[in-house]
Length: 216
Image (cartoon, rainbow, N blue to C red):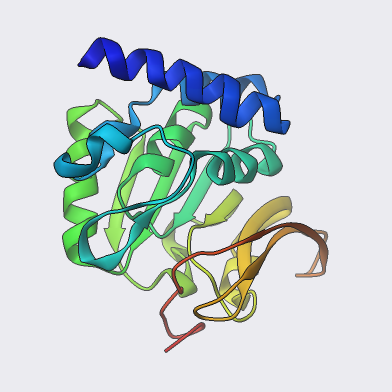
């Protein structure tokens, strides 16, 4: 079965990522390596490389591979980057980030998910990832500033604390829009003194970001 997963992973990279314009070699290398099935519910592992989101614990989801790849490519990460992920979920995106960046800090509101993701990441030897239970809408101030922030849940607007915790020229990617509807994936680049440049990417559908500076 492991051999089958390996073949499916390589096929996913070719057919779901490269064909849709993902060309960042570091991102493609990470997707070729990270075993998505390890982050999924055992009963759903056979669907690990299907082109779509899948359910995980606590009513949350593991995002469609293409959307995660688009988010990572848009952040323009290098091997020295320090990254904050908001919404650890299964830990899959954190593992991909850990393959590309120097250090990954990931914060999750639901303790059950944070603990499970932490165990999987540790088992897979991702020692450059730190997991915390907390309110992601407020970021993780102790370790700021970050070169990039990836938000894996949808907010009604861009939380101010996240912009504050970016380095100058740092990038933030976040879905903005309705709580239970279609959202716009936005790429935010910090210029200076919290001035930002905003770009619209794809339309997406993410679970809501709950927190003090987001959906209550």
